[in-house]
Image (cartoon, rainbow, N blue to C red; front, side):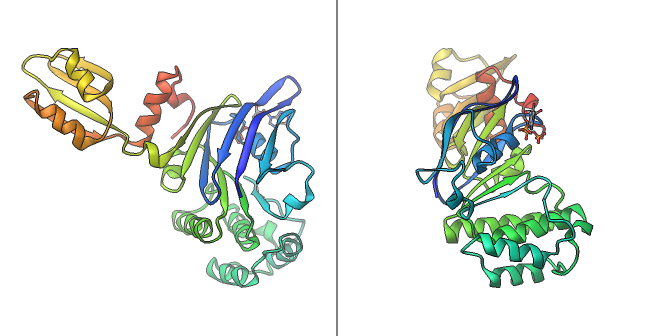
Length: 301
Ligand SMILES: Nc1ncnc2c1ncn2[C@@H]1O[C@H](COP(=O)(O)OP(=O)(O)OP(=O)(O)O)[C@@H](O)[C@H]1O
């Protein structure tokens, strides 16, 4: 299911929590919504889910508006940062409830996952640890087979092994059922391995939205030493978008492929050079810096 957001605003009194957000997410992909505390991620997720009515703009899933559309409730699932279960509910009781809402509910998947995560389906969920409650909400969500899954800080409180298993389950369902996932996080490194695209939210605005396959490997870092510093033609030829010069050593950020850059660099007979791929975080730092934002103020890790 494709997710299409156009000019969405949402305020609480004078506080604008989501401001003029546009976003398109391709079906069967995972999008990471990054931002620091208070950036507006949860408010945006709740607006996507139809829990909040946008003050203006629209949220469409496959051309259908989400807000007050009961048909949509059986297609979309939202896992909140603090999982919600009915008082004294067990996993089996919650499964009964989900089964009634989600027509593609898979009992087989539910049984398999409950066994796999070693949860007692008859235990009171509210008496479980935070991580176990989170596992329970994943079991319910994945067994529901929604077309769109919205996840608020999905991996918080999960240990590294469970974290990886949950990521694998999500990726499996994205691949096999064309599920669309939007996950919020503070952690770019965690998202870069599993997301197809990421955006950065800051003070309610979506500053940056990129397809990761397009930007991974799109930039590299060149460190190069010369007997005599080259003139501007060199920087132009290698495609340097940023440079710092310290003595005879030059460090450049280059938009381009490492092998291509290497061919160009060797023509200038440098004393030595090193070309390294940029991490996604470095690319973001650079691109956000260009827009006048300091990424360390926006994303914690
Ligand atoms: N129900 C509400 N009433 C009033 N203000 C709210 C409400 N919900 C959120 N806000 C405000 O909107 C802004 C965005 O909050 P939101 O919870 O969406 O951020 P977030 O990015 O999810 O943060 P975090 O990473 O800390 O969960 C904050 O300034 C918050 O105080």
